Length: 431
Ligand code: GDP
Ligand code: IMO
Ligand code: MG
Image 1: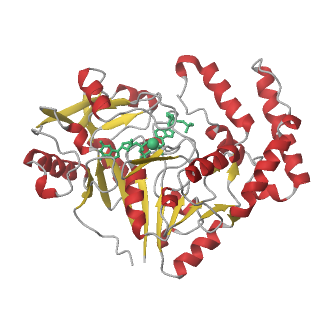
Image 2: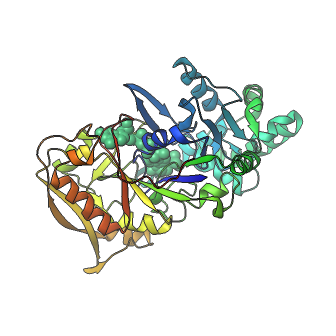
Image 3: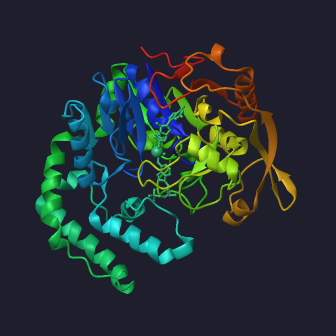
């Protein structure tokens, strides 16, 4: 048996989708356990591009069942749209290969509105959310007034909860001089879309328990990245869920002792979408070149991603926070053509050297990177599928990073395509 958690170690968009897709060849079940359609996971298979936001990446494989766990927040309209988009690409989706936890919380139209109004009113202090209602939905969950997928089973109950939720949000919207929202105008549409989802629903803990007892291989697919974690990230410039490995169990209904391996996905440089501290950001020509080489535009919002050098302090911290066993190192080809490659190996804070990202927002904004410079390589490594074909400078870069982050790199990705992946070690013991 091998149950593997895959998570991002930076600020998201590390290439989780590609690696989960690669690993799902051997997986029986692929589980999303947090986030929602703020995620954008790209898979490229023989030139066909799939962009998944809510559906687990395993959905494109015939051999794999996809499960959306209780920790995910689900916009029912988006879910049905994404299913349709995949069906148009000849992916078959039914209750046989897609299971949705009945305990997952809903993102409703009012959540998206609250997200937008809040961002608008925050002006230059905005978080730069994806505007998809993620934060407000999770707030209602912990506020114990949220609606869940299982509420679609009883119309009267659903309607009374929806009314209460709209009453709650209308108080704030009115205070912000926004028009009051009428739940009567949306209930019919929400209810009817909910009925389309009901056939897919089951308690996710039971499904996982059964798979586990059959000694199946389960992949837990994280969304976002470690420094967008609500507890461990660059708060308040974070998403509203936990993105570290421990969330895999909570967000799907299984205990930590059932997890065999945590794989961190790490980009060979650093990017971030939205506001917030980014010590190794390069706003000059190198940052522009990284963005151009790496096509760094958000999968969900199309926004330009901020780019900078690899930050070993951050990734070392991510390795500790999620007890990461090994790293899949992605987008190494994007460093083609750089004569010199910088690595952030430490920070200074008020002229003192530190080797961790401080917790305080004010301190995070103040830290300055300390760089080491490595020699770049000649030519292109795009599409390379064997370690022997990598130039020595690329191998040195990988070795240096392993030492700095105190973790092994077990896979290397050299292009968006599924097959352009190098295994250095295969520790998963997939049966
Ligand atoms: P995710 O959110 O972590 O799944 O990552 P995204 O899909 O949002 O962003 C990663 C982008 O990089 C996508 O466009 C991928 O197709 C692409 N990508 C993934 N791995 C590689 C790689 O090794 N090299 C290059 N050049 N692109 C890659
Ligand atoms: P994947 O899974 C990169 C960022 C947003 C914003 C912050 C809060 O593709 O790696 P939210 O809408 O979640 O309230 O926005 O989090 N963000 C992501 N950045 N990749 C993602 O997902 C992200 N999901 C959210 O840009 O800064
Ligand atoms: Mg993404």
